Image (cartoon, rainbow, N blue to C red):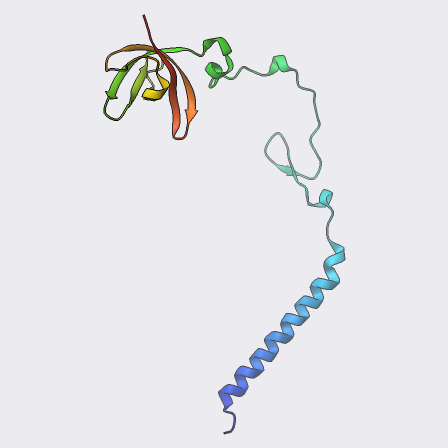
Length: 145
């Protein structure tokens, strides 16, 4: 059988594509040594948000000038770890429930294993919080007098 016109055309396209690929590969090899240095690739942002090629002026920062962080002050204060709250829900069959903090009104998960008292709804408790697998959980739960 002889070759058809379409078959010859496809083979010619394949040869051309292979040739172009080889040319690009050769060009990349030749230009690989001409890479830019890290300093040439860096860009800086000035105080107004504009890009510039020159690094900003460094000024020393005093720790007194930095405002205190308000969001996590409870975690920073080591003496303020105990919270007081009320057990809003407790399932004795499953052994878990929720405690609502008196101050922040946040609700925290509590498990029977992290309590030293028998939990029940409407019980006033003192507790600490820790990061659990799904969020913050109440631990070291004791009855609040």
